[in-house]
Amino acid sequence: MVAKGQYIRESPFLIYQGAFTLLALLINTNIEQQISDSIAGIGGVLLIGVGINLLGLKKIPVGNYMLSLFVPFLLAL
Image (cartoon, rainbow, N blue to C red):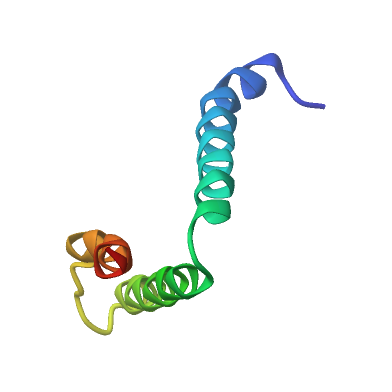
């Protein structure tokens, strides 16, 4: 049985996730497939960096590379 506090605690999470999902759907319909694939590839590389950080193999400043997700948009201009 789930307590009322659980629903209150999860509300902001659902709002943020829903907003990001709707934003992604709107953006995805207005960009080319090549740009979408490039963003997905960059995201995959960033996730690999997060995995390396979690394993403790090497410290990679993944947060510093978040702006690289916008490079495909700039190259398309």
